[in-house]
Amino acid sequence: MVLAVTQGGIAFGGEQYGSRLNVSIPFEGSKLDKMNAYPTFRFYDSRLGIQSNGLYSFWNYESCLTKYNCKVQAWGEEKPALVVSNPMSINDTWSWIHGREVSVVPGDNYTLSIRMKINEYAEESHVVWQAYNKSSESWFPLEYCPEELTESMKWESFRCDVVIPHNVEKIAPVLNAGWSSVQGKDSLSWFDDVSITNSGDPWLLDATIKLSSIPANLTHPTSMAFLGPDDILVTEKDTGKVKRVYNGHTVDLLDMNVANVQERGLLGIAVGSIENGTMPKYVFIYVSETRSEDGEDSLDEGTIIGNMLYRFDIVKNPVTNSISLTNRTLLLSLPSSPGPYHNGGPVLIGPDKNIYLATGDLFYNFTQASNVPHSLLPDGRGGILKISQDGIPTGKVLGSTYPLDLYFAYGIRNIFGLDFDPVTGILWDSENGPAYGDELNLVEAGFNSGWKQVQGIWEPSTTKFAGNKNLNDNMTINPNSYLPGNEVLTPLLVDFESKGSYLPPVLTWKNPIGITAIKFLNTTSFGEKYTNNLLVGDSWGRIYHFELADDRRSLIIPSLENNSVINESDDMRDSIWGQNFGTVTDIDIGPDGYLYILSYSNGILYKIVPS
Image (cartoon, rainbow, N blue to C red; front, side, top):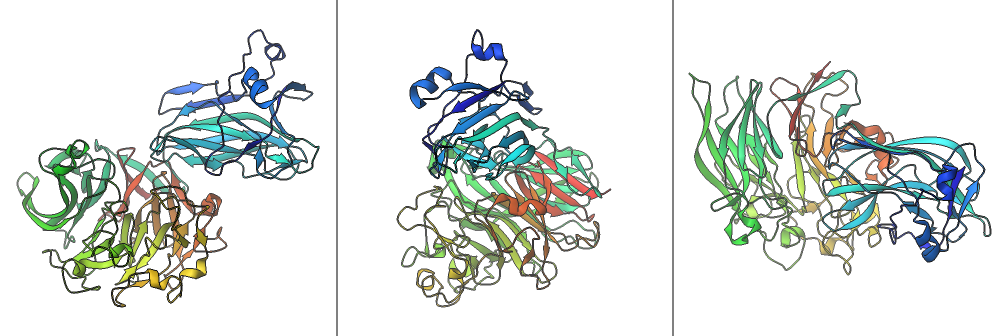
């Protein structure tokens, strides 16, 4: 027997499915209970310690009759299943069932498995993971599994993986029958064997490499730097601590007072180059600093000193092998307001021995560095700054007066990754868009990333732009519109008397992944197939592997027709190299030539070696 539900007239709202209906049909004593007509719904989460068969997706029968003129029927079928029927033949008039909500762990990888079949009239039938954004207190579609089906199909099984974004705390499956392709004929979709599982363990696609974790006892780590083999400095965002992880031990080296609301905190660390096996001389730390204690900004914004870049001397005790960070020297004092978002954080020592510090726009308070003509002068926000290890501006690309002379690049909204191509010596970055347009960029002197006039290849709506609202329906989409010299775009961009120039992204995502750390594999440890290729992390726990084209200014992505624009998540399926790493905040190559991954949400430092 099969439970069939007929319902029409609920429209798909783009960002989420219209009015949501939690369903709990009363089985006991009912005709449905006697028929035993229900499919299998399972949920298993090893991290949360949950195992349940209660993920039912049935209508509340009485409510269904009252509000939607539904009817329940028994259908002759070889196996119990849930059937969703829609008599409507108008495009985008959806018929769907919202499943029971379950709690999930942000950053973890979950697998949705489902068995489906559809009749010849079903148009765009599918299953979608509905996710609850705790910040905006709203539901939105996270992943389709499978994508919309439009042809008659007998029973077929599907499996899809998704990493839970950092701001999502619960999910639910939505079973959607789409609409009918022929007036007067019902669209029918059968759903069965729905399961959601999570093992909580990261994995790598390549069996020739091996993954392990380094015991370190970390809390929300953001960045790492190497003092030597098996000797790593790690920063913790909210505690303000710099920890030394070495030879199986973890010790606190430094404890700073940090503002830690949202994206503020202890954000970046770098050390001078390691030469001839000696200990580096300096360590550089980028921090949102408060006056007296951690987290003061949650109560009083006036306690924030600023986003500060400090230099410390590294002093080693030759007898005990212990080290200390001394002689704190302020190199840069930068704005930290309005915030608390888009502070940037990556600190990198370039091949030229200069410091490259990435800053964000501090959440929509714009200057000319954010391409707002006739607005505030640049003040260190929204760019990549370049100074010597003594704090002397060495960028001087856009001008010779402070702070304009700090800028190496500008037009940056929110940035989490920096690295130099070891072959060309050119800097690359990774940038987050609002609700579209994550980017990978080539960053040469004077690079203008385009924000806020353009993000990715899309122009934000000038009338509806507000905060982090999803603007997919309010954007101009034209990859050719934003090439240098474009007559429409050029007047909107600030070029600082032709000293800066816009360049489109090497790669951009229409639907953002929360792109984070990037790293060129400047090592031969993993063989020729990886040497000098690019790894990219994201906030969903994925790590992507990209080969570069011969000119090393573009990427080779076999599953992508247009090698610069990712429209759907499936476009990246062949580039996923690892999953379930939580929010990846740093990727680096150690002095031993091996790969290290830092996970913010898992609080784990991973090591990857050849197997």
